[in-house]
Length: 286
Image (cartoon, rainbow, N blue to C red; front, side, top):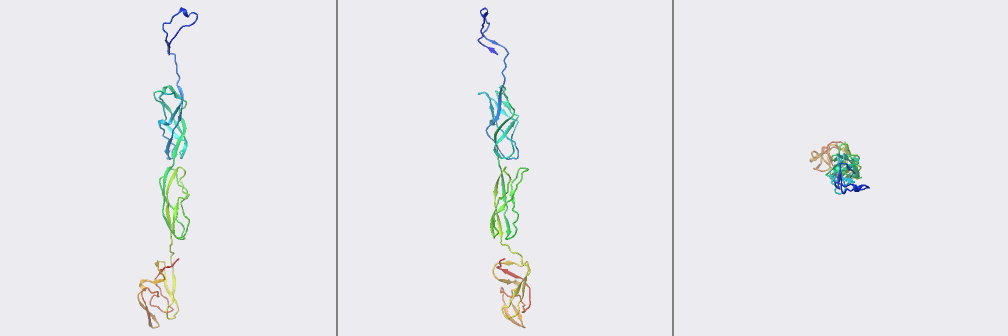
């Protein structure tokens, strides 16, 4: 420590003279100034299921720093208050220390720093609904979907839904109550639910045949099983192997021939009797 312009005073000062007007000695002590570290700016990330935060040099603020001094701060770690998506979240830095040319003149009041500078954005999650089909009046199948990858420990809840209706046609499949929670932003791709007319199985239906001529008693027509085809058109026709032209045997004589695709019974035919064969239904509404 050096003093300059030293002079003498007092009643006897006139009896003395100074060898020098300066004086120095190692008696000085300058204490480091205390600084308070805080966090400023913004720290952002996308939801990843952790609280880890990454700070940059510009995120540290030092209160009490003398203008012109070069002092920086850094930390050994930083974390959000919680892992969930949101804004204005508190971030805490730990292990804060000073650096820079002027850092020796300062001391930190605490080695931790906090600030409401955190933002965690929602994680995008793609969900694609699957198309579904059913016959009219059947129970709806389960509505399914394909989803992207969720963070370990997270899961989807709720179900898809479809537009209301039971008539033949198409209906939209929508997201319904399906959710991954507030940490995800779902990008949903809808699908189509189709209701078909559907045809119930036909089992052992007996169709009576009444002769167009001759006045005989009605017999039992061909028996229809569950494997018989059903197609469009009107009326019914005999199966191909029973549509060939044949003559009716009636009272020992012959009657008019049935030509192919006529709606007549399988031959031979006798009044009051019965026969069996396949009938192709056409144009029936069930």
